[in-house]
Amino acid sequence: MAFVRVCGFSELEEDTPKRVELDGTPVSVVRTAGEVFAINDICSHANVSLAEGEVEDCRIECWLHGSTFDLRTGKPSGLPATRPVPVYPVQIQGDDVLVSVTQES
Image (cartoon, rainbow, N blue to C red):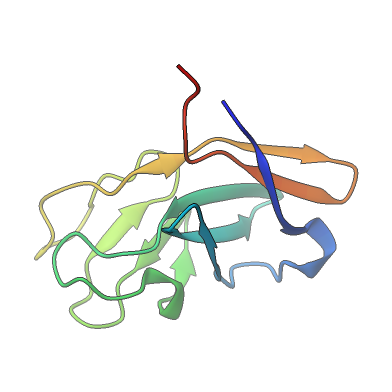
């Protein structure tokens, strides 16, 4: 996997999503409970940015219709969304947050 620096750990506010774009893929990077997660930024139900939603209990909520997605798995935990969104591996190196959205073949 190819990891790319997306921001500094110190730049991430607790429970505040940060939207980035990697290789054309919109990603929400979230620091919560001392961990960092990366999840596809587009709600699988309404095609809106998840980075504009709230984070609580390791879930991110879509601001438009209230669907919530688990930051660890991408699975929806509340309707109206029924399809998961992709999650991406994260590495922390010093203060750098690295995310991979692609797999090398």
